[in-house]
Length: 361
Image (cartoon, rainbow, N blue to C red; front, top):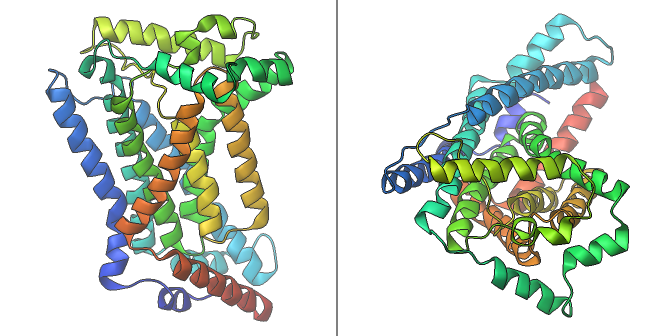
């Protein structure tokens, strides 16, 4: 597929730039919110342990390697040989990764991690902005009300056991730190239609905003902190270690908010769920492959179970997470101007053109 063909099927002019600037607009909005909110408490926005910066560098490096892989694979497909000739690789790189595409993908990735940094600061100050206000009792009562007086985590422990299951769900939960940037990188690099990747990345950036807002709406710690006895029978795992570290950080932050690592405990709503749901639903809305959709829904289901089983979230947190994940896609559509029906049609056209080009080359 030539660059001319791809460009002919892509948005142009104002519509094209609207898609590109959507992510940075989200980043700017949440960053301004974080600056104003922290300043009202005598604090400043910061990345004290350089987590956001390190993630951006690591994920950016990974994305760059994916770009190389993308070019080589496309060149090999075009020539039918591996490794493909250098001239073909150079040609594919010029066609596929124009300065505009590189700038658009890079700015979306940068905006995503600026949004994350701002989100992290907002999440940290919830107990300072709403001191002594926790809704764990109400959220736990809601859970028991819909499960006939039973605690859903206890039901899961009884139903699927507390041995190997704990380690599997713990590993899956911790793997979210890989899952999220992987979906972002793949969507920006391998999408035949870059607008789809920008739309998806913008939606995930919006999830940071919605998540931060939900923490202020209903401050809560989560079942494992509010009622640790329910989870005392679970074997030690990476998650139990992480839960202990997070509580230590919360205590230190509340004692020294200006210098300590920002605390990161907040249950309502679940961003693991909202972001996983966004990924799975986006795959359907954008008309992606069946195997990918099955994999993403499987991930979503495992994450849903894990958040309850391991005590991170109440059922209400996950319900709210699903709603937020859908809202993020709707808002991303409004902000980017992407018409999902047109995007699916354009993607199908790009696939057809690409297949035809491969067959005749």
